[in-house]
Figure 1 (spheres, rainbow, N blue to C red):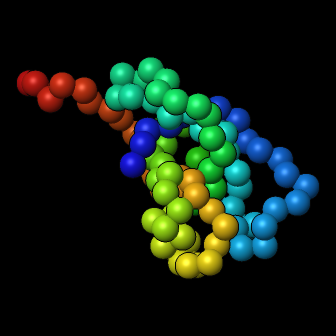
Figure 2 (figure 1 turned 90 degrees about the vertical axis):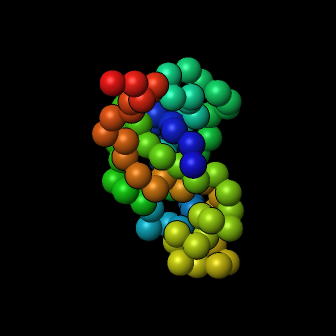
Figure 3 (figure 1 turned 180 degrees about the vertical axis):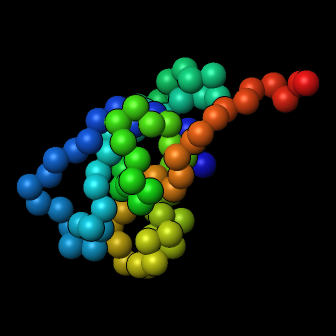
Amino acid sequence: MTLAPVTAAVVATTTCRDPAAYPLLVLQPVDPEGKPTGRSMVGLDTVQAGEGDTVLIIDEGNSSRMILGNSMAAVRTVVVGIVDRIDVGGGQ
């Protein structure tokens, strides 16, 4: 799983039939300190995240299809959780 802030929502006039029930979000992968670690990507929102939320994403087709419960869905990246807090270091 990867951390990613939601940077925008995507508006599409046409989508694939299978994942059409889910909104699309633009996601920017980051490390635990919040520094960008790669290129932005588009993912399906299964948790009702919004712009500015930090989310957990799965960026692997088979795992994403398992979450959607459809082994034939044309999907790769899925938002699977909203992050409330990130603690880095673990020292007390």
